[in-house]
Image 1: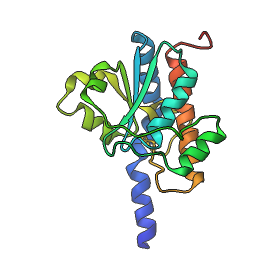
Image 2: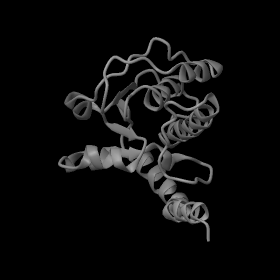
Image 3: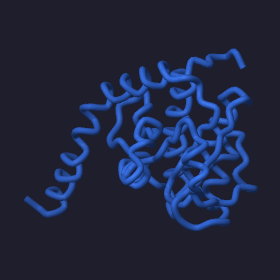
Length: 189
């Protein structure tokens, strides 16, 4: 069998548990969100805080009640702008990422946030490792996706063409919409 085919099969097998377990993980997360007190502060985290987390925060600010503070932060690189593709695709959806500047995740962010949504398992491990008290507050955003998934994490679109940003932002839109529904805010804000 050619190497390319073997690599493709290996990649597909690696994410098979993500696909199979997704409906169960989604229902479990929705139950946890519905049972906890409404968050006062929601924090979205990604690696560089340039694409995924600022976009997710912008969508959440549009959907969640104004009483909920929505923030975003990243692990690397403060004071960077969102890439032009992110700004353009967000603008297509009526959101302005142009003024955004990345910021580093701070201890205060972790302390003050009632709900922390990360983009992948590695980010969750990085936050919860050595801080077990955070485990109940850190969730994977991709677990909320109402559609079948190919992988649990929300892939980073940085340095990719606009179509990759569109696909990423489509998924974030679905996940943040599901977050809104799971928190039981409906249209009453």
